[in-house]
Length: 222
Image 1 (cartoon, rainbow, N blue to C red):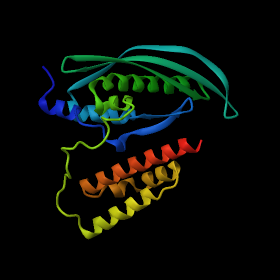
Image 2: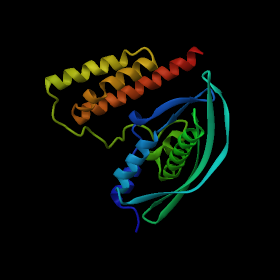
Image 3: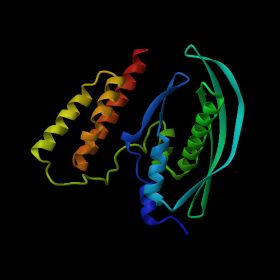
């Protein structure tokens, strides 16, 4: 069997900027998608029974005991190789994870989970933009809103929904730091997602654009 036209259409869409996270790695800001989102999109595109994941290899790197945050902790590191199969198409990814905990077993558990998740994302990434491939393009041409995509709900919003949207939008755009933006997003996520699809999507785009602006400003201030 092969991928359906509908699945291919989904895979060819641009990556929603609202699902792109950011963190610092070795002093550099790095964009990425979270593991739970990659699995969620795989279920949505391929179907819950349309793909499989198998961890084919794990390797434990010697755990060591040391001090972190003034506490004696174990540090464990794993690498993992994961195979993803979709309709006869087989892809592999290798991932790394490390964990810190007071007990060695807990550190190992955290590390192997992170390694498997990282490897899963790397394998799924080979299927395109929806799984983070677009983030490797420095110009981010595969991130954004597809031109063909319009509002899901074309009806004019009610005055109440429009007012709520405008208030959320104003608060997002007035956030003066990444922490403030993140806190506002976490505290108001349910209310924003409860709005009609087009208004909720508008807020996700505004959130992503504001986050990108704050990251840029932080870089320029250094």
